[in-house]
Length: 432
Image (cartoon, rainbow, N blue to C red; front, side, top):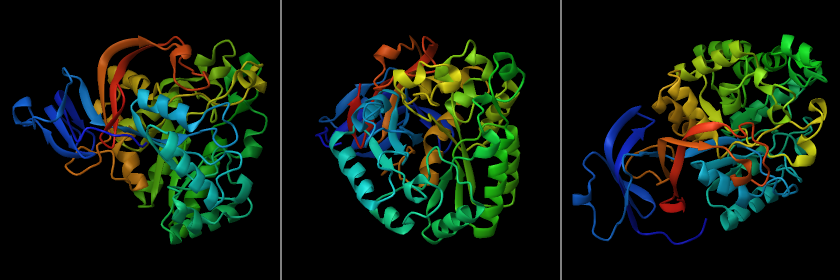
C-alpha cells in the first residue's frame, strides 16, 4: 500500500452516513495525513485549507470503507484463481477497504512465517488493507491445534479453518479455551460433514425436481448448537462465519440473550438469492452453505434488519472455468463478490427491508468492532478509509470487466444500482 498521498483532501457536498450513530447529514470530510480531521455540515469549501485537494461529491454518499470478514485469496499456492493484487483491485472497485483473508491456501496459514509472508506481500502489492486470519488447526485437518498465541503475535487477526468445519467437539472446546486465553476471535464455518454428505444444494422439493442431493439446514444448525454450548462452557469469543437458516438464527438469538460472546455473519448471496435462482443448474450459484428456500432468505433479512446478524460478507471465493463449467454436482463451491457486494446490498435498501445505515453498519462499523479495528467510523482521528458512491447509478454486471482474476459471479448480467466512485485507504485514493 505504499505510495504518496496529498497531505490534505476534502470531500465536500456529500451525503454523510455514519453507520455507528445511524445518522445522515449533508456536509463534508477533511482528511489530513491519513486521518479524518473534521467532518459534518460545517465542512464547506469556505473553511477548507487552500492547499487541500478538493473533491466535489455532488450529493453522493460518503461513508466508511467496507470491511469484508471472509475473502479467499489464492496467494500463496493458487494464484491462478486470485492474487493479493487482483483481489485488492476488486475490493477497491467495490468500496472494500479492508479484507480478512481466509487461511485455506497452499501452504495453509498455520505457521507464523506464512502470516509474515502475507503481510509483507500485501504491503508491497495490495491497494487495500489485508488482514490474514490463521488456521485453528495444523494443516486445516481439525485434529492438532495450531499455535494460536504465536500466530496472533505474528499478526493474525482471527482464527478459522476456512471452509473446513471442526468435526470433534473436544478439539473445538480446546480451540475456544486457547482462544479465550489469548483474547482471540474464533470464526467457524459450521457444517456437519456426515449429515451434508454428498449433498450439493438445499434439501427440499426443488432439489428433488433437479435430481440433486440435498443438504438439510440441520447440517449447519447442529454444529452451531454444539459450538454455542462450548462457548457457554469456555467463554471463548465465537463468530459463526456464515449462517443461512432460521434454525441457526434461533440458536444465536438465545446465545446472545444469555450474554454469550457470540456474533454471526451472512453472505450477501444468501441475503439476496434463493435456491430457485439456481434455475437450470447454474453452477455459479453452487455455494457452501447452499442457497436456501425463499422463506429462509426472508428470515435472514429480518435478522439483518434487527441486528441479530452482525455482519455481511462477500464470501469471495474465486474459481476458474475448469472447476465451474462442470455438471452441477461436480462443480466446486464458490462465487466472487468483492466488487458487487455493496451494489447487491442496495437491493435490500430499495425493497425497504433494511435501512441504508444498517446495511453499511453490517459492512463496516460492526466488523470493525468485532475485529477490534479503528476503521469503520466517521470520527475525528479515525483512519481515513472512506468511500464515495452514488446509490442511484445503474450498471450491468459484465464479468469481463470485473477486476477479479476469476469471473464466477452469481450476478452475471444482473442490473444493479449503486456505483463506487472513489475509494480511499489511509487518506490515499486507490480507486476513482
